[in-house]
Length: 250
Ligand code: SF4
Image (cartoon, rainbow, N blue to C red; front, side, top):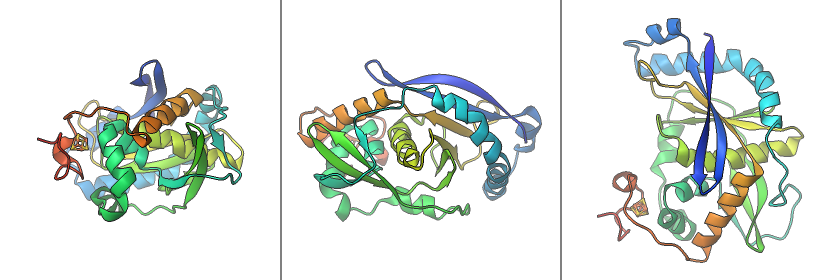
């Protein structure tokens, strides 16, 4: 399989954005996907990852290095921290601050169906827990996450989400910073495991982290921690984990 790439700037909010390279299959492979079943597609996807990751890793090295990566918000050595948070809090944060607020206060009591569903996929990669210390306001927080796979300078995260990936970008940026503790600039490859559409469906998205995105995430998370935000109904409400308890879901 060969591939093509298209660059885009995805806005997070205000003047904050991240660069994403969308990776598309070639014409021949696109035609092969017509009528394929989901299981066969995931098998091909795994073959693609195994075969192409060394080349992607090397090709993306220069792209990732061109971003402003240094940030005073990140530490790898242990510092006194206020609490530990799961990296998935950034998914919730980019969906809606009310959801992040629920996750901060009640996550332990709620069974996260998204994680269980994604775990049951038939793509098995070797994953490992990673962490980073992240400064929000005056406090440090230990962010813990388990990306699906790490290959040198590339974190790979599989997802059932296809199409809009904006809500995954915060976690992708944090994962990339977690990976950078091992000494080289890293990016995150978001890989949808559902079959792409016939034309525009990308097979993966490379997220380039930058220090300004960290500032955005810290500022938004601080508002949630301090309870200084307003919420309203949004496109995610009907599938939200917290819709039964949220006053904005109806
Ligand atoms: S139901 Fe909607 S408004 Fe409420 S937490 Fe979920 S996404 Fe946010």
